[in-house]
Length: 320
Image (cartoon, rainbow, N blue to C red; front, side):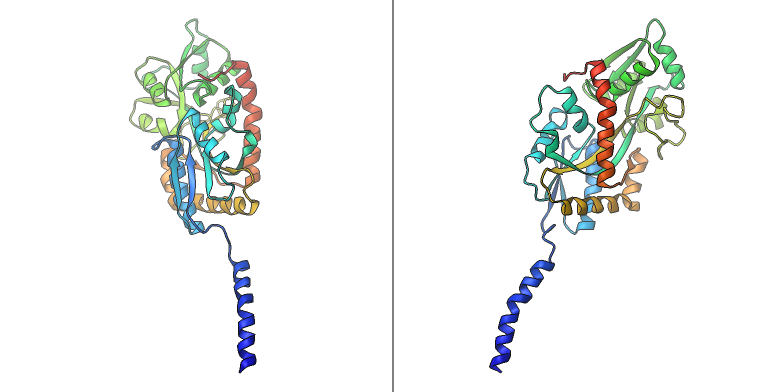
């Protein structure tokens, strides 16, 4: 009997050790998604929908925290300086690629944030007022060559509509008066009221105005038509593949976060994006879920940088 007791006492520590090795240390408490914009926008909407779906895959809540400012740089910097333990992630927009090109200085290095996965894309839709004589890309570029030229509203230097205007310049030539507003919504209102001829904004922003008969969609600037606007052709279909850009969202982690955690988060995000619940909430708004591997997201970012950097230099884009 004494021998049996000794065996049990010796075995118990080993049982505990094996259990510790078997347990997955991540994730065992709530995770944070930091959004570099205020609540209610497209980036915030995507973050919240995906956070809810991915949390179900991981078995831990994912809390969305908004840290707006400096074109999303404040939020990115916060995450770049966070502990690389897999509990703080950054939900980015395209500014994570273009901000270093446009701003004179950055508080963090590009390598301080590592790609985890793409979330979704809201293509930029080129729009004119509902009563405009412009009906397609050809009409738009013809107007740009008129002596009066084309007035095009943007959301400021380096915004997606600014890039669209510069792409149009390169492709079609002509005269462009690029008019910056404080936000994409203000630029859109300027088109509705015929203060300017055209703009290009995220599908999620313009779809309600298109459906309400206040705006006319000329083209989608992505490489395929979107579910919410199936009748709107792409710029590529109309012969202008160089006019290509979208409002996208992706997830990044602080440099040094273990690969195993990055892979697990990528899988959780992808599984969430493929659910009917996520697709039914995003696609009607013009937001296309875009699951993919870490490698495919890394390649997308490199391609965006290669494609957009010459435009920044040619247009001499500087921070406002």
